[in-house]
Every structure is written in structure tokens, then in C-alpha cells.
Length: 274
Image: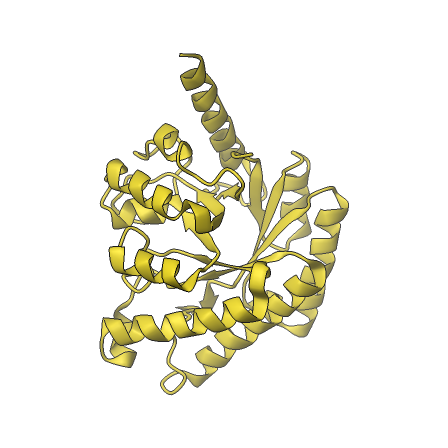
């Protein structure tokens, strides 16, 4: 039942132990290029087993966000950036294989914030988006119920955009809905955000709960932005998992995530009583 105490960390044991002391229901691993080496993948596997051994059964691995100082775009051009393409495909395949082996989830970003380079590589937005959809089809087919796709603020894969929402529904993707991304795409309009979250709820298996002012990617603690959390929580898929994906002052202390969880639960309790 939403909301769960879902926390995120790197593969650092110090960060992991900080999160585990609060007995989360959901744990999401933030990975980077170092985790994708042979030794890095072996360490990731051991940390997944470690987290599971602590009693956490809902585990998500976030596909690396960056490669060689660039976003790790699903829409990377194999011709113009063959190394980036090999990294993106190879790491996705490796994580899907690991997820199947350990019965966990892999989260893949449909796109990142700046679409200009991706669109330029393929000539226009429509072609770039189709390339991304074709690759997401491959990942979903290969990983099945072990793969979920997250929305972006990029027009290539932005929830709140009717064309993208129609496409993800037609392709039957399992979704991660980042609430702040949807809010930013919709320019801080809570009515449109609620409509979008509701429309995609049946396909959404995981949420990133994070606040925003609705102007840019600010990753705020819940209650510090302009999202109407009570309304959003009325339309989410209550069978889905969630984490609090908040910027932390100290990566070894998840205080802002815990404060977000307390804020949301207090808000829901107060509204229900009134």
C-alpha cells in the first residue's frame, strides 16, 4: 500500500547501511559507470543480496545516468557515438540479466533532459522518439516483468505529453512515474499532473516521489515545492512501489527522504481525519 518507505543509495556500503537502519520497504540502487565493470557488477550483486538479507524484498536497480560525462541516452546514435551506444546497450543487457537472476527490477530512463543532441542525431523529434520506442520494446521483451521505464522532462519521453502517453499505453510498458518530471513538463499545473498520473496509473509499477517548483529539475523534499501531494496520492496505483528521490545534503544521511515520508504520511492522516 502506498506510500512505502522507499530509499535510494549508491552501491556504497556506508550509504546502504544508513538506509537499512530505517527498515525501508523498497530499496533503489543508483548505479554509475564504475558499477558496470566486471568487479562492479559482482559488487552490485553482493549488495543486492545484502539488502535482501536485511529483509527488503522490493529492490530496483537504476540504469546508469551518465557515460563519459554525457547522459546515458537510450536514444544515442550507434553511428555517431558507437562507444556510448555500446555502453548503453551493454549495461542495460547486463542489468536485465542480473535482475532476472536475482528477481529484482531494472529501471531505464526513456530519455534525459536535453533532447537537442538526440534529435540532431536522427534528424527530427519523431524519428528520435521512434528509435527510443524500438529500443524500449527490446528491453521490455528481454526483461519482461523485471523492467520498468521512467519518464523524463525531454520531449522524447515526457509524461503529460499526449503523444508520449498514447505511445506508452499502446506499447504496454511497465512504468516508473517520476512525479517531479511530470510536474515540470506540465509547467507546475497540478490539475494536468493529476490527470496524467491517473491516466497512466494502471501501467505504473513504481513512483519517484519528489517535489518541485515546476520550473526545472530541482529534486525538492516533499512539502518544499508546489506539487499537490494529497491530490496526486488519490490517483496513484496503490499496488505500486515508491522511493523518495530527493537531493541530499549528505549522501551518507537520508534525512531529507525520511522527512519526505513523514510529511506525506502526516498530510494523508490529517486530510483523512478532516
